[in-house]
Amino acid sequence: MYKNIGKKIKILAKVIFCIETVLFVVIGLAALASDAVAGVFFLLLGPVIAWASSWILYGFGELIVNVKEIAERMPNKKPPVTKEYKDYYDNDDLA
Image (tube, rainbow, N blue to C red; front, side, top):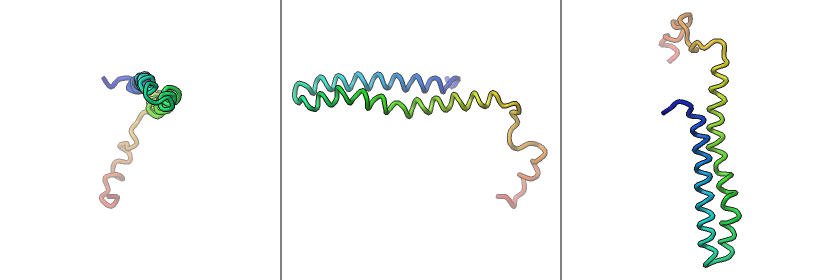
């Protein structure tokens, strides 16, 4: 479920973009019947707004993918606190 989460977030961004685009077109067509200006606004600018709003979610997924690739390329995967420095971090004066 949580494997390849970056790729899944990117796919989710694309799916949400498609759903928003379809909804904006349907709303635009419905709005054309009552108000031409609002209908044209939804038909033309709706998909652009959906596209721009998907950037944040897609960018977050891309960030996760890139960080994972960088972490896999690191030659030393030790945690930041090692046994050599354990006594230093257990000091009560640091808290």
